[in-house]
Picture 1 (spheres, rainbow, N blue to C red):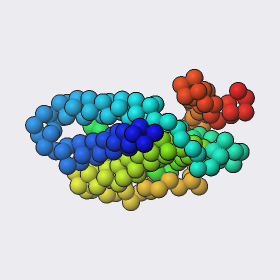
Picture 2: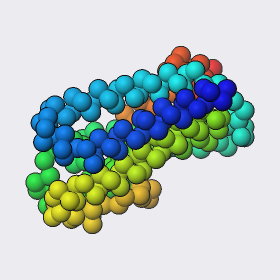
Picture 3: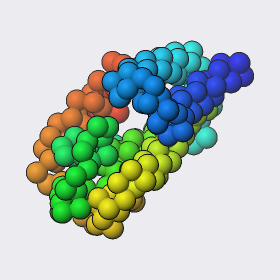
Picture 4: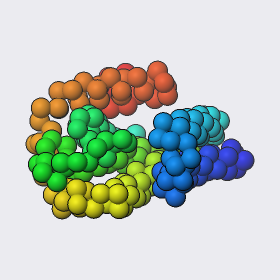
Length: 226
């Protein structure tokens, strides 16, 4: 067990570390040498390789003892709600997201935040963070804790580093956007996702339903139905 957990920890470190290194200190010199498309190709290959190793290491690592009963009603309900919120933010992040690669920031300072961006300027990253927290609550085993903490670190620190890089590249546009938006999600503004909730709920039902076949563990409402 110790060997498999150590391998998983190494895979998690590689996955998170490669994202940080390629996205920040090595991004500029690599783009200068390879061009934007070449950099994206190298980045994608390394990211997919690291993800494949992470998935393989996670699959081979034994679950181990849980720190608490994640199947109890309270953590199960909390995890289900957080996963639904995560999908709402993720769906909202797919439209007009200025944080995505190669998005032009010109005119961003004149744009009024709408939808998911009234909740947080990093809805995609916060969706990953909420996914991680939900899995910590419901499956507090050594291998799941390692994976979830890696995703949580990648999401939160990655979002902070993304702010720093965008601000350095375009201080006026991103600086105004930062003033108009919040880093941490403002849950009182969840009503801004109202037009997306139907899509988010359907996606939540589909994803949690697939969880039974992909992981062998029922999730969400399927935990009571299956």
